[in-house]
Image 1 (cartoon, rainbow, N blue to C red):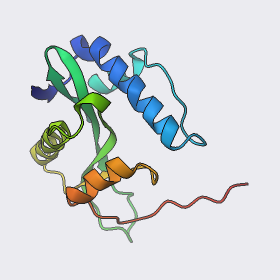
Image 2: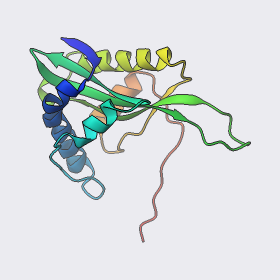
Image 3: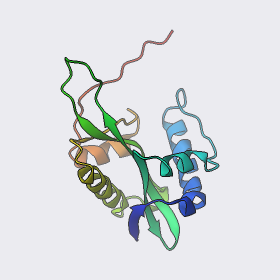
Image 4: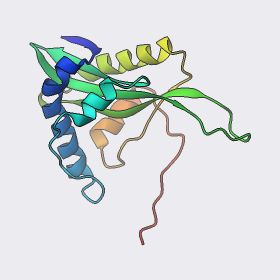
Length: 153
């Protein structure tokens, strides 16, 4: 297995894993996420971006996981300490490949991507009901720094 940057040639192979990601999120938080079929526009846009990438795990010419990572900056307000950081927008290992070290390899690649850009930290948002994912992040020393709260109207 290898972990590498995705290229335009990987878009077709990445689409089923993105579709699985959308279905997972829809199952965990159906009020806010819905299952969708990825056609290639989303990964194409990221692969062409100057500040974001897809890192993919590939085994036997099949994409089995990915991280969508993007370079970000804190808001430019005097009261906020300025930081350049990486944000993991999406992170998925296909169901049949979990608990085999794929996530760890992808996370290490994300760390290396961030260090190469001299970023200060990696940030991500995870769904509150995504127990397996949250357990993974807890075990990888991600700490909670904020909570998102909603008041339904």
